[in-house]
Length: 352
Image 1 (cartoon, one colour):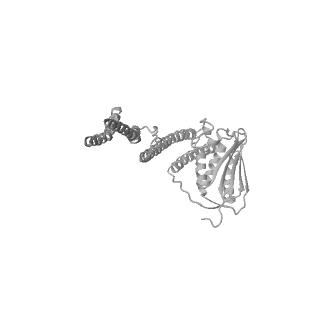
Image 2 (cartoon, one colour):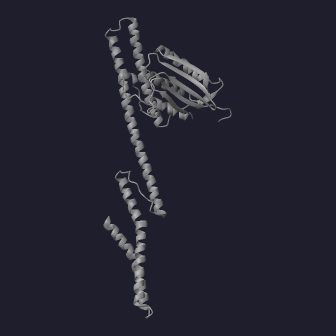
Image 3 (cartoon, rainbow, N blue to C red):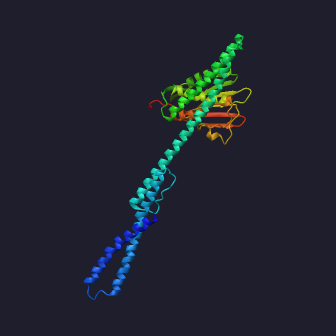
């Protein structure tokens, strides 16, 4: 590379100096005594200086930047996308070319990082789903073997075994459903069916359904609406139910109190409806709170069967709410509980 630079520099210098030297030589041959040796010597000196300066300018302004560009291209060819191409000392078209190349390198690097993150997320999801499917499958096998071996002899025992098997099968179905939904998120193919929804009526139905399940599980559930009956939002009913179930499911999963409590509350917030779901569970540490809506983030890193899950429940909540034009956030205090809050924009007559 160094020898190539020297040859290029020498070639440029000769291309400039030789024609100019021949020109001066022609003047000298055709001149009389008016052109003295001293004047000729000065002219040659100026010629050399000018030629050298022009050669340096061409080398630093064109040849060297092209060399840098070539080196950067070789780095990308070898798979290295970290080498920065500096174009600060270059001007004109060459500078624009180098800046375009650098922008391309940055985009390639971002795409590479996104792909690596995508691959890591997929591996994490598969690991979580595989781990959490083992628990209900093991339980189902154990209870079925108990039935086959005649352990469940009374109708009450048989009913308890069958109900447990049913509940564990539901857990498996929920995990598979989350996996399916996750693939739709990444492909940006969530099947939304938006319609006008009366807020109070919809969340009252959700509260009735969820409240029955909570009471059956020995938890207390309450519902309060401070929103007028005629308030309407544009929403997908099924996906909004998924939001409620994911939030409440998380509250149930991480509730460490003898008597768990969950409260669903609606508030009128000007142009928005604010939905609050609060529990009296273990709460979330302040440093963990900003991350709970990230995929696979676990404030509780334990992997016990009672606190399993795919790790994408709240990230699904965030995605659905944002696709509805709303936002979601959380407040929590360790030992006292957590409140998940999301807002939905009211529908105004005349909107399209």
